[in-house]
Length: 55
Image (cartoon, rainbow, N blue to C red; front, side):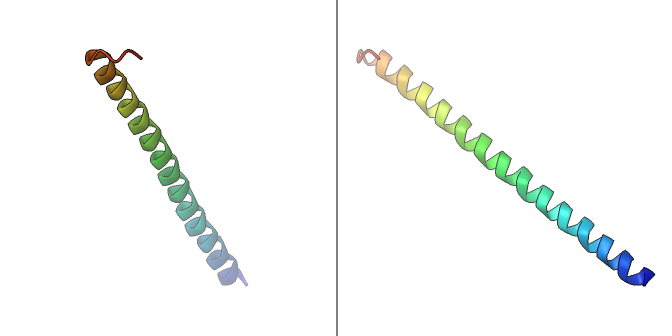
C-alpha cells in the first residue's frame, strides 16, 4: 500500500511540474507576442511620422 501511495505522489509531482512548465511557456509566448506587437506598432508610427504622414 505504501508503494502505491509513493507512486501516486510521484506521478502527481511530475504532472504538476509539466503543468507549471506549460503555463510558464504560455505566459512567455503571450508576453513575447504582445511585446513584438508593441515594438512593431511604435516602429510603424515612427516611420509614418518621419515620412510626413502624420499619425
